[in-house]
Length: 100
Image (cartoon, rainbow, N blue to C red):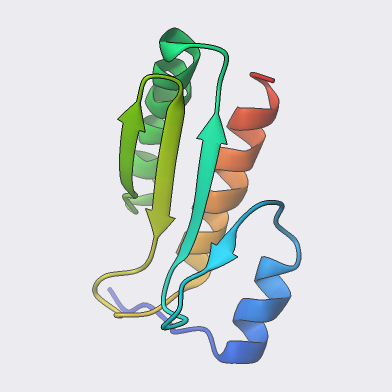
């Protein structure tokens, strides 16, 4: 499967449609921290996002510490950002909005 790398303009355009996501220094990844009321809410968010990631066949680099989930998205095989990163970011934002 091929993954089309997004150019800088496309990345900026996609990033402008997201809330709270930051472009990494090298421009090849986006990151965001999600803060929840408690561990159970954070874990429920991760579970929902894991199922979506499986459907997209695109998996996040993430960590959880009690009520915080830190996420970094990049397309490793492309060594860059692709549409899949932004699709998963939007799905994560949607999952988060249901929990706040």
